[in-house]
Structure formats: C-alpha cells, structure tokens
Image (cartoon, rainbow, N blue to C red; front, top):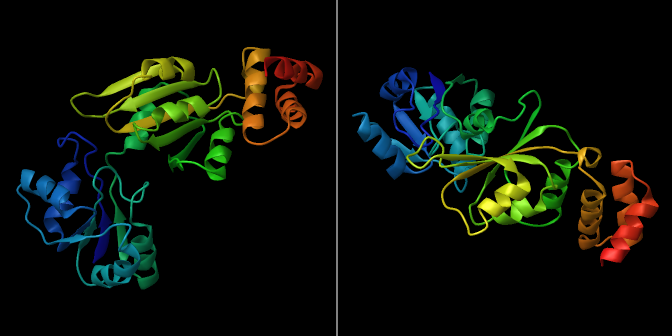
Length: 267
C-alpha cells in the first residue's frame, strides 16, 4: 500500500487531473493541511473520505503514525493548494515512509512555482526556488544578495504586504514578473523591471503573490549610479563607505575611487 502525494488546484478547481481524482477515490485516508478546505474540494467532486489534519504544527508527531498506516492502506497526502512538500508540509512523512519501507507514489499536477515560472517569460535554463522569503534579518539579506551575483531566474513566494519592501531590496534594473492570483478570476502577470513593478504596486496589492526575478550582476547594470546604489545598500547594512565602495567596485569591475567619490558626494 502506498503513500500517494497528490497535487491539488492552486485556484481553479478544474485544474485537477483525472489520475488525482482516481487516487483520491481509492484512498483509505486523506492527510491534509486544512480539513475544511480539502473537504470542499472533495465535496465538489462527490468524494467522501476520512480526513486527518496534517500541518507544520503536528507533522513531527503524526509522520511516524501515518507512515505505519501507509504500509497497510492507501494514504493520500494533499496540501491546501499545489504540490505537497513544495513550501508545504510533507517532508517528514515522506522520509518516514521511505524508512518504513512503504511505497511512495508522486503524482504530477498543479504548481504555483511552475505556473509562475512559465508565465514570467524569463529564462528557465537555471532556476533557483527559494520558497517564502524570511521577513527580515541576515538570512533575508544574504538570499536577496544572490540576485545581484547570479545570472539565474529566482522564484519566491511573497506576502502582498511585503511585496513593496522586497521589490525595493532587489537590484536596480532586474527584470521581474509579479504573478498574482494565478489561475483565479483576477489573475494578473506584470512583467517589467523592479522599478516599474514598484511603481505599479506602490499603493499596495492583494492576493497570493509569486515573484519571479532574473538575477542581474552589477556588471550588467546600466551605469555608475546602479553601482553606487549597491554601495549605499552595503553601508545601510553596517559597512563603512570605504569598504562598501571597494566591494561594489570589485563586483562591478569599476574603479573603487570613482564609486567612493560618488558615494561620499551623495551622502
């Protein structure tokens, strides 16, 4: 008997596969983040199954029990929306099933990550998915600094309340796609630079957000002002103007003296 990992719609209820419905009908037990939300989905497709709440607050305790169940019966794992384990609970359960020798079956299906990535129109050869950004602190700064160092396409999940701050923290000139309410009635995909996105959403935004941004190194930036702006960011993080200018100059290939002179004059 397997653990079956089943993706569910991220918005539009029609975006569920025939195979997913078949496996849900065959399940003896459905583990889900929110029994009410999953209950509505099952009711829509006239499926009645025992539900058990499985989320970040109880997964460590329930994973071994559900893994034992998966050795004896069909256990389905779903998240509130999209593919389980992708910034959602499920990792501990998957590991417990592997250790217990239970079969694991993973179904393809809806994913906000893949939908946003394709809709963004940005390159997909090298993709870095970073889930939900930390709200603040050193980890957040380090993650966002990667966008100024690596020529990859980065995908984040972000709160609409923090979208403005995140756009302000990204490197100037970076191409970005703000994907909002994907597959839902008010779906929107805005494509432009981080500055254009910041201007568009200056008065706020609602809905679920997936942010896709193309990494842009300082060598790709349009001019000295972008390099100086990066140096200002390093100063804001606690570096001295001298060290900040040297760091930005090294990353951009510009002379330290010109970056330092412009930085000092602009203070």
